[in-house]
Structures are given as C-alpha cells and as structure tokens.
Image 1 (cartoon, rainbow, N blue to C red):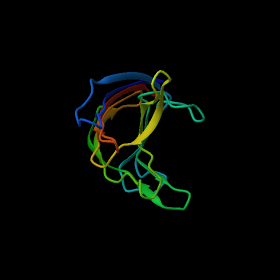
Image 2: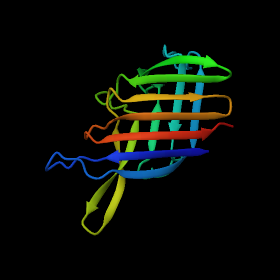
Image 3: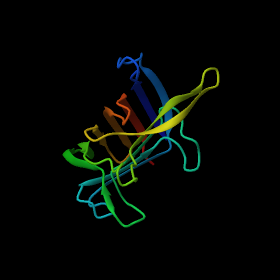
Image 4: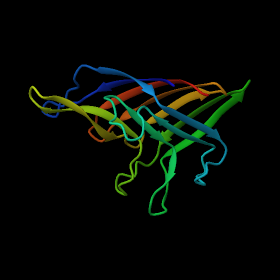
Length: 170
C-alpha cells in the first residue's frame, strides 16, 4: 500500500478564476505495473492500473483511478494512454506518457479523479468522478519493490490537478 497526494485547482464557473488549491492524501489500494504487451493486446510497452479505493467502496475526495488499457464489455480495446519506456537501468524502469483518448463518447471513461461536489449549503459534499481529459501527462519510475508517478492534467470540468503516487510493491 502506498500514498496518492492529489492537488486540485477547481475553477469557479461564474468568474472563470481558480479557487485556492485543495490537497487530498489517500492510500493507494492497488498499483499494477507490467512490462511487455498487456493482456489486452494494446501496443503499449507497459500496462498500468492504479486505484486509491477498494472495489465496492465509495471513492474518497481526491481519489484516483488510472487504467492504461482495457477491453470494454462490447469487446472494444480501449487504449487510453500512449506510454513509453525512457530507460531501464539497474532494475529501475523510467516511463512517461500522454492520455491520448478518454473514451467519454463510448461511455467507457476509466481515468478518473474524484472531486468533492457540494450537495447544498450546510449539507456538505460528496466525491464526484470527473474524467481526466486527453493531454493529461504521466511520468514515473518503478522497480521490483517501488513505484512512483506524477500525473498532471485537467478534468472534463476544466479543473487542473496533479497527483503524486508512491507505492511499495509486494
């Protein structure tokens, strides 16, 4: 288990100005990284899967889900990220990539950041999933025992975010 620190700059829809940043720290519940052709058959040199909440649980504010590729229920191969390995030295792999397709139109968006949305004055807020949009960037490194990544981009609501992930792989 590791940590995901999300910094969120929400935009005020009335003024177009950004609010003060909010910072959320969550546990990462799963980090999967694999070199080689993913089981989906996508052409990326590595496969990524990252979540900051367990399946069946409500996501926390600032929670993230990153999926490099997946096969949808209809059989469509969704290749979300264009990833590349920059270097492999002394057991450490460095990588970078760009979110090339968010698949919102196909209703299979999978790269999500959970942003707190106010329900009503005085009631509080709940995390609401927002899709990371095309052009979001990722860079990082991993070894047999550690994973770290930085993700920077915007959501469909034009909020700007950055996520720093550090995880001990077991």
